[in-house]
Length: 367
Image (tube, rainbow, N blue to C red; front, side, top):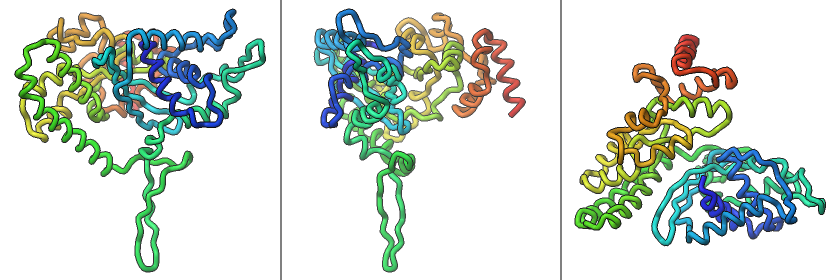
């Protein structure tokens, strides 16, 4: 992860905490460290340096300096509920006023490692007082609007004369998913908004000859496509062998969209289509993804500039796809998850592609 971007996310989360009575400056670099733990598997323990400062504080300020130097800013940041103790954060960044990058990361309460309150410096101080302060920090860092967006539970209360529908926000021990009808409505509105934008921008885009303007327009629309729903049905049935083995070592697997966002934007800007046509094109083609590692994801960025298709790029970059043939690919996200649970984390690390295929066939026979 780009450290200056990590800092900007940490700063945005920290600003949400400033009204909390326990808030102090340590919360900023504690959040910064937790993001590194959750997304980079940073295993470095909490340290106090010879310069009488927390090492994570020093690292956080260094990242801040780079962000200031590059004039990097967050243009858009969306926080999605995963569970009570985890959020998925999607961010679009800009440098010098130009959109330059987009990133998805995870923010977890468990990523605030125990050393934050168990390790003490020579002054007998710790970064956080206790896991209680950790919990307060995590809750306070979530924006106010996110509380309103959290899953709502509907309860029908019968009265003698009438029935009233009452909406009550889920408590920590009683949280349910957003109603399916509401989720579907939100998705439709996103597609409708993008369709309007495409229809109004298509002519100016086609009339633009400057490559920098065209590239910027494509980046902007690519970011819009990034925020359309990514569903389990978009999974194409494959995972890289490195991602499979890494996941068993508790490393994060990431979605790699077979059709890059910028290329998708170029297609949609160049080809007029109805709203339904846009939805179908997105769900049937543009949203398709497989799982790979973060490093492999970086290698495949803009693969279409040098390779004819995604498979050719993977072969050239020596990224092994699993299963090894289309006839035996995973039928669903659920089957992949069940297969991963069935594997031995230790034994799997030494297995090759064919041995893993044998494991998959054995797994399917047992089911």
